[in-house]
Image 1 (tube, rainbow, N blue to C red):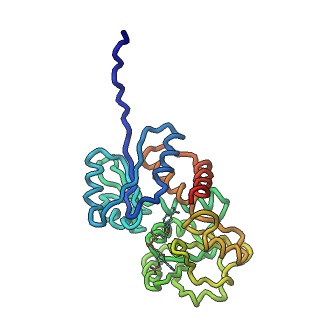
Image 2 (tube, helix red, strand yellow; image 1 turned 90 degrees about the horizontal axis):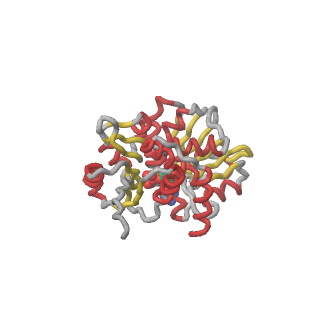
Image 3 (cartoon, protein in one colour; image 1 turned 60 degrees about the vertical axis):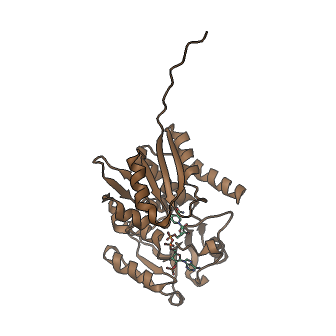
Length: 287
Ligand code: NDP
């Protein structure tokens, strides 16, 4: 007769990403790779949250023992408002993509998008932002999230151009005390060169490209698209066609912002290069 085996309770910490829509989110895939790689016991799910349910769902997630949340479109500003304390980056950005309970039990909001993009450009690709002429296309939540981090690198200037020009001006008004910022319109771009052009619009997801003149690219220009997909995005193709030195997409940013969230939650820093390579391969295979 075999002896009864004591049931071993394995405690698994719960994390989740809240958004709407959410079914294409790669975050569960990425965090599961991080957990395997670092030996952390956790489960990470993606939850589609009804537009008016965000605050209640966040509260019930943490009340029932959830350890950390990522927040994506369209809830980053709601998460900022709900947070009881915020990092300096999140405070400035007005948008939160990472939530957890801090040591005082307060709901703490951070924004890891800017760190994610910086790590990808600077650490993964050897780029430099200090002293550069930067153009940002777009003025939505993602641009708001990365601006404080970009300004901290002390570029020579950051110009912002957006389909709805008033939103670019609003960002410039808000951040102009922290660096040289300009709001431009698309037809003012002729005759200006930029060292780094960041596409922070979702236009490419609709098969569209903002009306950028090719003349803004010179042979040392880096182009960075926050979106990604199978093969080159439209903006990457545009960058290559106009002779950019580098044409990068947002896969690296996605993995790096996730790694920063993982670190904030677990105090363990995952290795990202292998996860970026695996995600690129996954995207090529599945889309
Ligand atoms: P928002 O909806 O807040 O903003 C969208 C922006 O895109 C606005 O500036 C909007 O202009 C512009 N836009 C949309 N469609 C067009 C178009 N057809 N032509 C020109 N401009 C257009 O989205 P987010 O800022 O939150 O996100 C932007 C993109 O960045 C998303 O696609 C998102 O997936 C990606 N992202 C990637 C991350 C990563 O880790 N790689 C992290 C965060 C975001 P207007 O103001 O005129 O509407």
